[in-house]
Length: 252
Image (cartoon, rainbow, N blue to C red; front, top):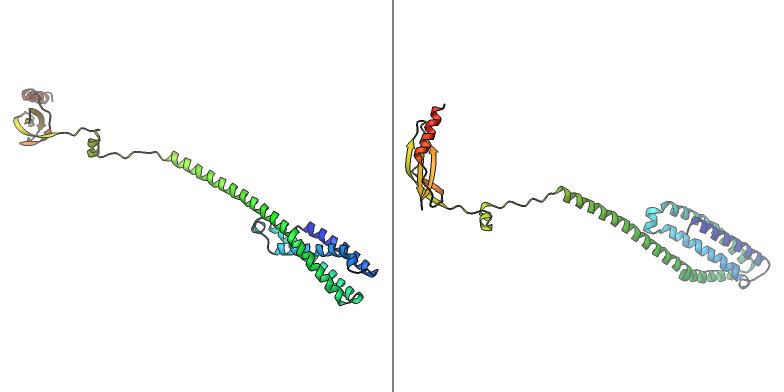
């Protein structure tokens, strides 16, 4: 209940209280003034309920409406003090004019009115408030969830753009199994002929299985080594190689 509504309730209670006092002064009994008494008690009950709500506000109110809740609590407190003064004045007046039993009868009537308003007015107010809070929390959750999804999508997009997929290179053995690389077949090549040039280098011809020939120009020729199997080749002309090496020496 907001401060404006509390002020309205106090106004209704004050107007009804004046009517009750005037009625009792004229000698009317409680039954004859049940309407004014009911309005006063209803307003008193509304102010008490407003004070309870201000003391135990919902979580949403604590987070986003703290100022309004404090204002309503102050208004409810001031209103309750004023109504307590009216209650005391009414009690004294009834005891003096109608005896103690009149005020007890008034309290019974007030208890019935409070019970009726609790089962009807206050329950409906609480239900509407809970529905409103639930809708508000759903909206807040939707906004927060949408923001989180947006941030995550942007992050994923940037991460994908920054990361360039590079497939892992296969080993040579894996490439051979996949047929991407042809496995070289080796054979033992043995020294067949060697001639030393004027430069001191040697031209060495090696022969492997099925006429696999290899030519090496080295300062020293091993007797054999593992060479690539290349069958049915033609023996290199070692004399041409030596002449090329010697002619290169003359040109220097």
